Length: 256
Image (spheres, one colour):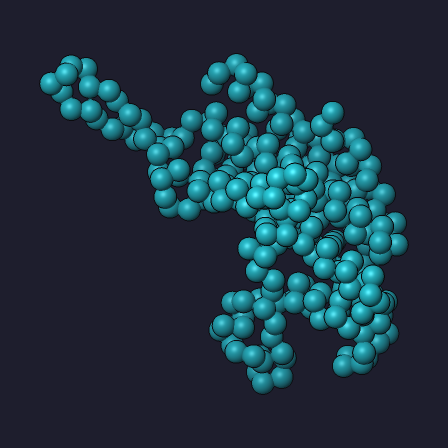
C-alpha cells in the first residue's frame, strides 16, 4: 500500500475508532407511549414520541454497523467493508430525509400528517405488505416504508453546491456491493504476457486493502451526518437525554 494511502486510511479509521466508543456511551432511555387512545387524532406529544423512537433506533443500529465496519476493516475484509459503508451511507441519507419531512409537518403543526409519516418510517415494511397484503390477519394495517432512493435524492441537498453528490456516492458504493465489474475486478490479478507471442493470464486474489480508501472516508462522512442530523432532530423535539451526548461526540470527533 502506498504510504500516502496508508496514512489517509489510518487517519479516517482513527476518526471512526474515536466515534464508536463515544456512541457506546449514548444510552437511550425508555420511552413511554403518551396516554392517547389508538385511533384518536394525533397530537404533538404522540409525534414527539414516535420521532424519539426513530432517532434512538437509528443511532443504535448505526452504532452496530459502525462496529462491524471497524471489525472488518481491522481484519482486512475489503468486500464486507464496502457493504457496511453503503449501509452507513443509507442511514445518513435516511435520517436527513426523515428529519426534513417531520420538520415540515411540525412547522405546519400538522400532527396527523407527521404521525402517519412516522408510522411508515418506524413500522413500514415493503416485504410485509407484499407478503401479506394491506392488512395482517385482516386487522393490522400494513404500511410500506419510505424508499431508500427517495432518501438518497433528498440527501443531495445536504451537500451544498453539488446537487448529485449523494446520488454519485451511493451509486459508487453500490458498485462494490453488487455482483458487477467493480466488485469482480477487485479480485483479478492482471498478469502481463512475458513475451509478445504469449497470451495474457488472469489470476484471482483477495482485494487489496488499499481500495478501502474508497469506503472508509464515506463512513466518516456518514457518521458525522448522523450525529449532526440526530442532534438537530432531538433539539427540535426538546429531548436533552441524547441531544447533548450526540453534540459532544460530534465536537470531539469531527475532523479539523
